[in-house]
Amino acid sequence: MSIDLKPSQALGLWHAATLAQLELVGPDLTMRQLVILLHIYLKPPPHTVRGLAARLDVTKPVITRALDTMGNMGLVRRVRDERDRRNVIIKRTVEGALFVEKIGDLIIKEAAKLPRDGVTG
Image (tube, rainbow, N blue to C red; front, side, top):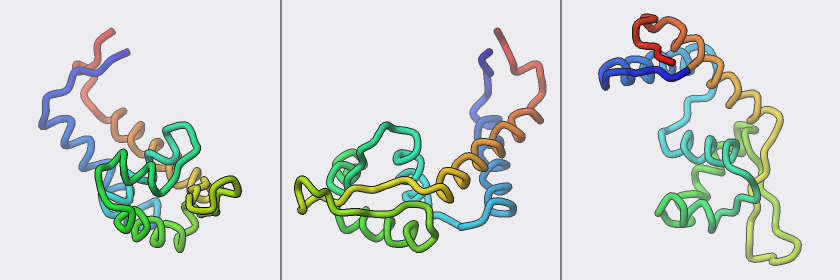
């Protein structure tokens, strides 16, 4: 099943889902923090500060600040790579997995409200 959306409909879905996330899910993340969190939970590990910085084309301190915030929220945790102590590996947490899953559920809920004439296949 695919959904054909106009840009305004896609933005409306994004708006509704992010608004619901702020109201219902909990922590208020910046766009950068959310992108980092989704990358950690949707892409196969391992994830490192260096790797995230390269992938997102930002500096390591930018990633570190975002991880500090998300770590304080319990969404991720960091550990030193035992094979190479210079690397910091980012680990998923149960709380983080539940947070990401709730966002996915909200998007599904909001998408279900879309007019059915936008659905094909």
